Length: 486
Image (cartoon, rainbow, N blue to C red; front, side):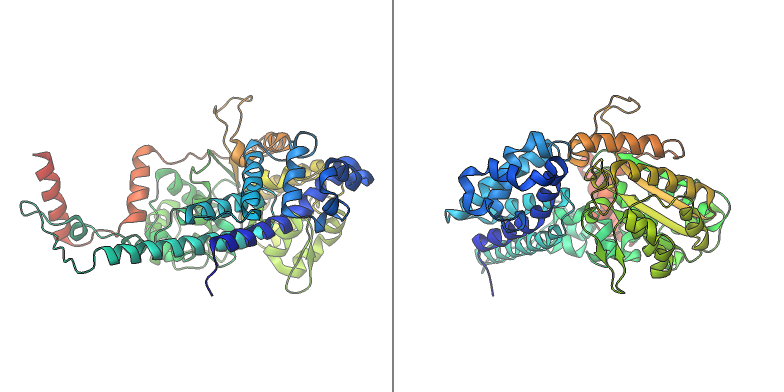
């Protein structure tokens, strides 16, 4: 049954309420301890009906107002100006929704997108549900636009004629099916490592063969893959690689390339990998254990219960479980329960389950939510960076282990005083987290650079168009180019 945009926004606000309540309560308790609820009630004097209940029972409007009014004291250390803007926008959305104002397709899309971004910033699992709603809305909008266009052109036959004997461009080069049909979504152009790890997402990212068919191997990406093959399949390669670019610079796409390369697919079926194998000096790839940790998909305040009943609380507990299941987790279960650094047990685990590939994305988004004291299941701020150092040292000491970490880049490369992208870093604790991680990882990392402007053109071309394989296509292409040149 179809739902209205007003109903969509209402459902999204309910997800906002469910996702923000634990985070708001956690941050208030971190600052005010036993007085958390009383302080919140003091700020919400005009909202007595809700403020008398626990945080979990509060309406989205009250939670958003509380975040806004207590931003500097409570939330500024964790979240940045980008999240503050989202809070303001969602307060307006909620007011419009409560007053039964209409929402256009664009209005609803923006509301859902803002809700997803805010929930992702606090690692709320409800972000995935809002994203699904957003993508469904976008498909609905496209279908309606397609029907309108079809009705507008009904009964009018338009024959595409070439000019001066030139073929129409669609006969020279063919767009991918999703582009040609109009179902291409810009949001789906952004890679999502966690979504792929969960077996979700579009085929172009989820299926290794299709991924490499649409991926242009830049010189930097090729060097990254060659180094990874050497590290995991022979005796060369760097143990720790840091991917550091500005927002949208290709870090996650590079991680997906590594994820699929060592996912068990036949290398010969992956476009461009034959050159990688040749440069690495290997003829086959081993079976590799893959670990994926995405900071804004794992909450330090909410333990996760696995299908076999195992309860995982920390990032190191998640790593151990992914690399070797319940048996490997039991090796560090005590450290997971107490949120203490597992130390040298990490090296032992990595050696026992080699070769292994560990991909960590959005680490700053996770670390900035930690507190100075050990009041969260995920551990304290200090303990986490002790773990980060232990992990990098373990990856270096273990055989056939590759640790790849993405971090936001500074605005000024090489400057210790550079300010990183607020969208990826967040507030004061986010900047402190980034500085600490750079200090820990920087001692062992190998260099990596994003795509050049020239390579960027080829990246987009391969994403949008099918490859040209027929000689007639090349002739037609050159004919068109020559005609315009002349």
